[in-house]
Image (cartoon, helix red, strand yellow):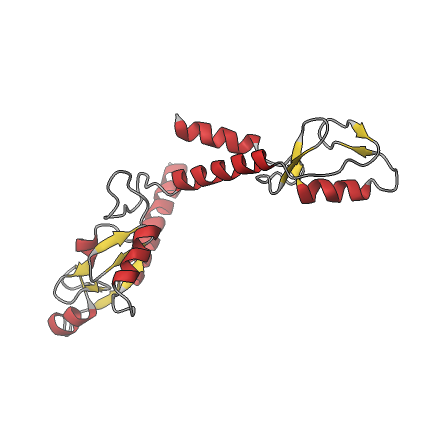
Length: 210
């Protein structure tokens, strides 16, 4: 319920001219609100006529109203913006969760191959403060880390051995897979996706011709 309410409120606080969230919001005499820069540009164009209108309800004003920032509206927009960012940063289905967050799990942005843990933005900054000098190997957030990292060498399993049909890190591949047919994980994934697409296309062609 709270998530839906934040979304609706944000839509209500969009500027009718630029359609983005209000920036330096002002309210004109009719009660409608706009970005300061948007309504100023609009009324600069109305200078020749000497009549200034609300772009939403078309009510006319003469002389040109003095524009003043609405501090209460600005504070409300800022709170809504922060609430929306907080909601968006929470981990959802399929997202990699931060291993440090306790009450609400946020989306992880980085994974440390030394700590074998994933971190949200806040906890990743803390991780860097506790481990200065970039000594830890860090990658983009990755799930099921124990399946993707070689525990002997703390390195990603980036080599696919076609002979043994298994994933290894480069060091393990050099030692265990001499003379074997190997490929990078990225290339193997691409080949399998291509093969799957070819099979689907052939299946559709057969179905249409039947």
